[in-house]
Every structure is written in structure tokens, then in C-alpha cells.
Length: 425
Image (cartoon, rainbow, N blue to C red):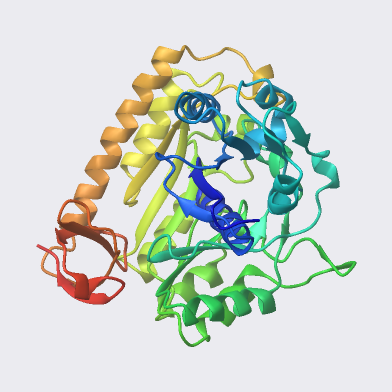
């Protein structure tokens, strides 16, 4: 492969996808490709897709059409969750040359060597039941905070979710391998690692060498905390039923694990949680939040919540709104329920009208804004360490405090990837 070949990437969806895109990029660069900007001209365009919502599917199709207008002779490769779930649908999009499922995304170099523009679209995928291996990934040189994938897949059967169908059974890396990757990242100058996975608290599950591992997520964070070279860790997202009290207490006493949790709730009403097939009730969620705040009053807590799930009445939604309003959390990630093929939720009636879903989304986003504003105001006058990122955004730079308060200030090169004492005001 000649060095004149250029490749451009676009990532849709979660932190896990960003880590995998970065790894795929390095594989291609090692093979002689030169990475270039997605909005420019490239010989190969790679789109790493999400399929959590219908909007993510639509965005993928729009990106392909944009490439067709700009560079009709370029190769277009689609991978990610949408590619695993609906390969035939993607193959029918004009301009798509290669569709790589979950088992093939990291074999992209070999596939491109035998691909010719103008051939019929090639689909390289398998049944998700046949996907059992774990492929470590991490983002590097893309941002100050690095996303390190330590777990993949999910054994849960939530009624709204397609991720188990797109990523397979729960499986994970070993503690030893994760430590090796963390040392590599430390040597490259990374200051903060965000641990990512589909169901992160399920770490330790999966097959390696034919034997079921006995390692746990708690053991992983203990080992990382003792490692020299990385100054900050964050836990990207963890299910409330897997967030043990010992994990909370450990983070509270750690110098390296930041006082920041992101805990999916999805609904604040127990009846809806049951229909969603979630593995907890809101009382457990409230207990976890209270314990975090008992140990770490300054801790940021983010919440995932879905509005408009089938059969969610005005009373159900009000129950969720009131529960979140009274909960000591910092911000919300609000998702509007989107029908997904082959999910149990499609069998639940009645369906919530789309306009009602959007109105509920707006109400919770407004609540999230107020929550973050209040959380920030609680810390005014305090001095906290901020890790500044390297992007120069029209003369400004951004960073986050240990407890995830976003700071924007005029750009100073000497602050890039540095921990700066910052008085909140």
C-alpha cells in the first residue's frame, strides 16, 4: 500500500465507538494510509455507526450521500452497530463499497486490499452469536482524555435495546492487559483515561483461553489506581445494580479516580422500569446517589433517561420528572424513545405520540440545565484542578475539573494537557 492513500473517519455514537475508530485508524496508518479530515477529499471514507436511535441510522445515510456528491470515486466503508444489525440495508445505499460487521471491523486492512471501486457492495458479517473474541481499543492523539475499552457486549435483555444484537455477549479484557495498555498510554503523555464498555460493571465476564475469568471491575480499578504514570481515571458509565458500595467508597478515597459517576436510570417510575426489563428499582438508584453524596458531596453524577417509552403515561412521566428533580444529580442525558427492530418494546402498548415524546425530552433537558447550573454554583469560590484539552477553538480552550465542571478560557499553549489549579467563579 502506498503512502499516497488517504483515509478519513467519522464516528457516530458512544465513547466505545470513538476508541474503536481510533484503533482502526492506527491499523490503517500502519499499513501506509495517511489520515485526513472527513470534510475534505480522501481515497477511503470509514463511518463507524451507532444504532441506538433512528436518527443515528439516518445520519449514516446522509453522510454517505454527502461523500457521493463530493468524491464519487472514493471507497466508502461502513462498520459499527448499524452495520452488524442491518448489513443488507446499508449495502443498498448507493456509494457503499464495504460493510464490516462486529467480527470484521478490525480486519479492515485485509478487506481493503482486495476491494475495487465499482464492484458490488461486499458484506463481511456473521451471526452475532459467533462473535466471542475481545479486541482491545483506545483513542490516542485525538484528545487529552483517552477512551480505553475494557469490556464489550451485554448479557442484559432491556426491552428497548439492540446493543446485545449488535455487539454480542458480555466479554472483557484481562486486568493484566488493561494495565499494559494504560502503561502505553502513560508513555505517550496521556493524563486521563476514561474506562469504557457496553456494560462496564460486568468486567471480568467472558472467555479467555477457554476458562471463565474470576476478575472483577473492583479489582480492575484497584490495579489501575496503583499504577504509576496516569493521573486521572473516569468510569464512563456503570449500571446502578453493578455499582457496589465498595466501588463508591474506593473512588471516594482514591487520588486518581475522579469524583464523577454516570449511572443510567432510564425511568424514575418502577412500573416503566419493569416494562423496560431493567434490573433495579428507583429505590436502589436513590440509595446509590445518597451514598455517593455521603462520601463525596462534591461528586458529579450524570443520568441517562429515556422519555416516551411505550405505555409511559403523563403520570409515569411526572413520576420520573419529580424523582429526578428531587435527586442530588448534576446533569441528564435525555434520549427520546425510538422504535428498534426485534426489540420487546415493540409489543408494548399504547405507543406514545412522537410530539409528546419530544415535549417530555424538552422538559428534562431544561431540568438538566438547571441541575448543572446549581451544581456549578455550589462550587463557586473553590479551587479545583482542571485538565485542559489541546483544541484551539477560535482563541479559546476547554477543560474539565476533577468533578466534571466544564471550564472555557482564552487559549494558552502552556496549559494544553496540563493540570491547572483553577478558582471557580
